[in-house]
Image (cartoon, rainbow over the protein chains, first blue to last red):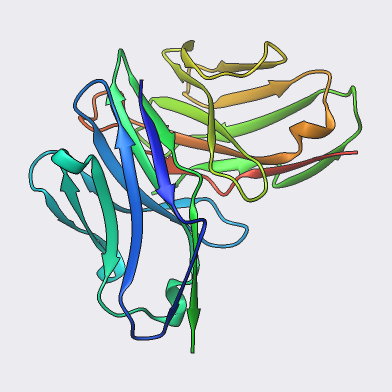
Length: 114
Length: 114
């Protein structure tokens, strides 16, 4: 079975500061890991994905995440926050157990202060 | 290239009623997953349809049922609505032959149960 834990339901940073959103996962089989972003009243949009090709994954809008198997973590970072980054971020884990089933974390709302 | 489309976007029902939500997957996709997202929470997996059959199911009661049509579109039906069924219902499509299970989301159907 898979599960995802996102540490911190809310994170607040100043514009230009480092963004760090934490995600830990559990999976009984080799996982695929994702970060999705959700803007108000919209569906989810893929930011980046880990598919075992490289442990450091680069996504859209300057975001990146590093897969650390020993720590079962997949934290999301961005060197410099922009006002437009304010949104809800979801970490997700997927595994092929007779078809892929993707499980999401509870989400972290990112606030960016001017 | 049409993305995932869902209808209706908003609807209001009363307790005990039944509702049907519809989803058209992204062009070329053959798998549809449904998620329930309550306010302030992450998406919860309801079920997944592939080849017109329910392939996987989350921890939802039998009041939640679905269907997939030959053109890969899908419906989610909820019977005997409860106040707690109020949520954003997200449809996500994917390709069964994908090696990661990456999901593409619609913008959701917001259901309010009074």
